[in-house]
Image (cartoon, rainbow, N blue to C red):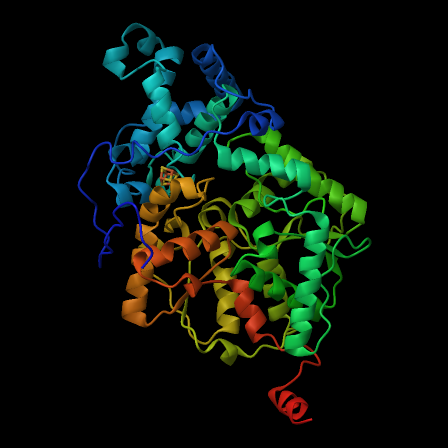
Length: 509
Ligand code: SF4
Ligand code: SF4
């Protein structure tokens, strides 16, 4: 079990609403962004002198631009339905992690400055000014929201706390109080093309290494191309796929599927990142700049299609915003969706019978599936409602014999966040990450005890990184989390692939 500098919550058999313990997570704050990262994104380098007035001005600007924000701030009736729905409240007991209380941190300032009652009778309507103390609460608790939108599923008014948290982060960025992890990453994408700062030559080396590994393993020359002009498909995938485990096993799987489908494909060194952290800080300007890189890469390489790899929030940005941010995509082949998810591609190939699959290659595992928040609650796949739930499960069942779902209250649209989404996947937030993972790990543990589940598959780079880090805190193994395309990769038998008998003969020779 990984050692923690904080108390790791005990897993329970059934989800229990914990007693409220005020202030337990008030100390949790991510590192503040350095001036160089702030400025690269168009924000002030550090907290400006007139931060109060500038923050209120920004809030006014956001309220004018996004009507949804004002509707969310006006319509809460304090029914309480959301209070026990956030994994961060369930894992920490801190009442400010109840979605309604998190919203109220912004709502009280909104009321003070933008409503008549709040201006004249602040105490009566819970209005409060933006003091230094309130700003510190914003910084702490709006970085304890992974923008997973689970609370909005249970709110009778559909209030989306994720939007409120994005607005709060935008306001803080605009006064020079941004979060280091998100802003450093976005600045890296501008400078180098991906979140990890992986330069083009290193990326090319990695892909060449994958070609060698797959050849050694199968005897088949599967290509992992970089910057190949005129390829059919531009694969835009999270940069974690290039080297992290289990992500890279998924990338190997994408390559095998493309190979068997007989399509040419490439990644781009210029747009070598599917992730778009502009969404986490609520900045459409930065989301647009990152998305525009994909457009430029697609034009420069002359591809016909764009396929996204396994990444939750990237699929949300792609599915919901890519056309608005970087369209029109009229230079691509209109016979295919823009963009397309790798699972849609693979499922299509499976349905057409183009993949030779041996499910028994995954018989050493009993799988369950973790629906990633952004895919589950903010996107779709395929052409039927609920495709984002069915297609990943269909693909898993097509390549594995043993599959069991976790408890119904913790999957599909009610899925629990991994605890590391929304820009929280940083070591300085490890305590909230571990505690926030509790409801999901609890459901996994129950599936392990009751159904002999051994592994959990996911289709989000953040979920994979988060689980491989936090599972050991709960006494589980880091490699219990796997990529769906890792399972596909295990099961796929490539045309001309070496059989076990061939290998025996090679050895004998
Ligand atoms: S969006 Fe998710 S993390 Fe944020 S308050 Fe709602 S349930 Fe909690
Ligand atoms: S469920 Fe909706 S209306 Fe009810 S308290 Fe929560 S945010 Fe307010």
